[in-house]
Length: 510
Image (cartoon, rainbow, N blue to C red; front, top):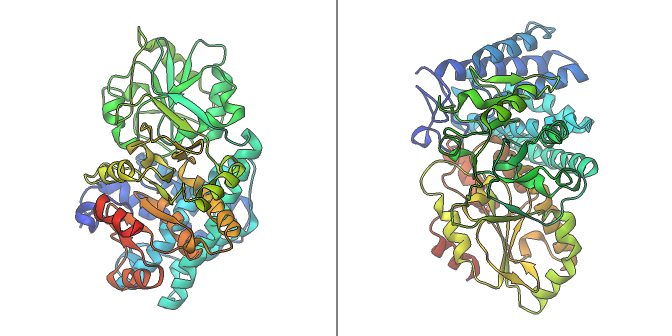
C-alpha cells in the first residue's frame, strides 16, 4: 500500500485510496499531507495556545482538505515551519489512527475531518480579522484527543463537541462576511459571458474577490464567479462593482471541461482545484492555501498583476457567449440568507398554517463527479408545487437553473449561499421552530444532503449536535464510518442513505 486516504466521498471503491487519489493527488502528496497532519497534532500537544501556533494549526489542517494543495514543495515547507515550532519531543504518526481498531479509527476520523472543515471556516473569518477564543482552543483539544488512547464514549463526546464548536465557527464566519460586506439580498445572476477580457474567480474567499474587484475596476476586465463563489453576487459591498458581471460555468467537478482553452484567467482562492490540464495551465493562478505545481501562486501581498496581465493578453471572447446551467436555464437567483428569509417568516408561517405550504426541503451540500448525483436534480424536480426547496453549497448546481415558481410571492427555490451558510439554514429552522412552539424535528422540514469533502463532515456533525433527525445522506455513506458507528448514528439520529427520489419523497410526505 503506497498511501491511505478515505476522507472524501469518492474514495476508491468506497473503502480508501491506496495507490493514487481519485481526487488526483499522488501517493507522494498524500503521504506528505499525512506528515503535515502528524506535525500539526504534535504542535497542538506540545505548545501553548497563541496566535502563531493557532494560525499554523488552522493553515495546516486547511491545506490537507481534499482538492486544496497538490504542490509537494509547499506542503514540505509548511510541514517544516510547523515542526520548527514544536517545543517538546512528542512523536505522533497519523498512520497509528488509520491502523487502529475500526470503531476508534472511525470516531477519530470524524473528529479530524470535522476540524479540517472547521479550519477552513476559521481561516476565512480570520482573514477578515474575526476570531473566537473558544473555537481556537478547541483545535488544540480535538487534536490532543486524536493522539490519546480514549474510549469510544470519550471520543463520541468529542465528535458531538466538534459539531457544537463548528456551529460557533460558522456563526463567526457569517458575522465576518455580513458585517464586512453587508447582508446578502436576492439577486438574479446571468450565466452568459460578455465579450472582452475576463477573470473567473473560484473557491470560497470573499476577501480575495473583494481585493480583485477593487484592483480591476478601471482595467476593462470583467469578473465572473465560479462554483462556491456564486453567492458573493448577493453581498451589497461586492455587487456594487459594475464589472462583477455574472457566474461562469457550474460546479467544481466540471472545471476541466469548462476551463479547457478558456480565453480568460482563472483565480483559485481555496478548494476545489482539480488536476490542471495543459490546455489551460498557463492561465491558472492560485492564492491563499491552494497551490498546484507549475501554476503561478499569488502570495500574501495579493499582487494580482499576473492575473490581470494574463486576462488582458488572452482578450476573452470576441463575441458575447451564451452559456447555461445543466438544465438549460441562464439565470440563477441567489441571496436568500437568514436575514432575507426571516424577513418574510410571517409569510412562511401563514402559508404553513393555511396549508398553502405543506413541506420545506433542504437539498444541498457538495457536488461531485461520481454517477448518481442526478438524484438531487430529479428529487427537486419531483417536489410538489406546495413545497419550498432551500439549497446551499455547490450541490445546488444540479438544479439551481430551474424555475420552480413561487408560493405567495416566495420563490420555491431559495439559494442560501455557500457550504458554511448552513448556519443560515439552521438559524431559519430554529426560528421557525420557536414560532410554531415545537422542536426542529417537529417542523415540516426534511434534510436531503449531498457530501464530498471535510467541510460537509463538520456541517453534518453540527446537525447531529443539534439533535436533528432523519437526515438523508448521499450519494454514498462515508467510508470512514465503521458498521458499529453507523448503527449508532442510525439508532440515535435516524440517518438514512438516499434511495430514489420517488421513494424518498413518498417516505417523507407519507
